Image (cartoon, rainbow, N blue to C red; front, side, top):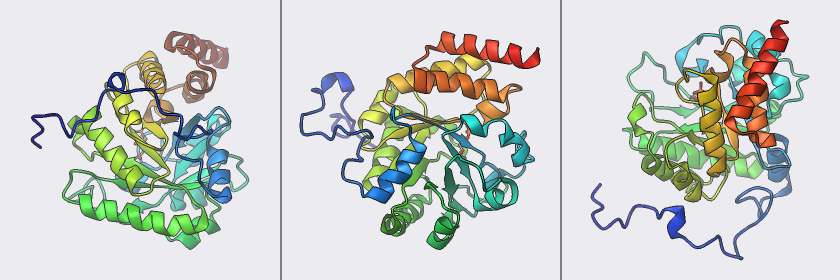
Length: 298
Ligand code: 5RP
């Protein structure tokens, strides 16, 4: 994409005046004009401080029985009390999750591809709106694959889903997927994907953390949640990227493998809640993690 005069590139936040007096200033970015049901659902997922920690266990929908997610009910048992939302497909929800849980559900409603198939991007909408209502979900999640051979189809999926869900006050969370091309995780690409998702009507966008993350959040008129991405070497690294992302405008996280593939997943989630809800610095979160880990093994 030629952009010699930098006309396509978003301005850096330092080049811009503070957000104007006319800008919405409510509890959640972009939510001032939402209907009651939509706001109510969002408020089940996003706490009064405007922040959230979601727990995703949807990985099996394209990669089968992922390590540490072989039996989802065992994985989530000790984690649900620390999650503000559970991201899951309808199959695992029905088969493995106790309907008496207090944690609100974000239903994964795109799929139809697999890691052994031709192209991960060739997704369809997998779940009807009647099913979303039957399962009493707080929101739904769908992937978009900007820049892929299926860009148009996946963006159309998002637009159609928003059309249906808006009728029933169900918030749509767009997931800016990159397939196997992890080098796409730049602020330029992710800002583009997030903005397109919001323009098509997503009420929340989930995207990868990257350098200059404020370029991503600044260009997106709805809240941005950080997706996990590849597993980090240390817990401190996880707390560091989450802290930086939160400082740069994310409202929370949706971390899977960095939580439940850790030998002490509940301690990771509780320390992450420290960063997300109690403004802990990465080192303080790491100290809390170690304390919790040690007290659990006493
Ligand atoms: C998979 C997803 C996952 O919810 C998301 O990637 C978070 O999981 P992880 O932290 O393991 O990457 O949307 O498509």
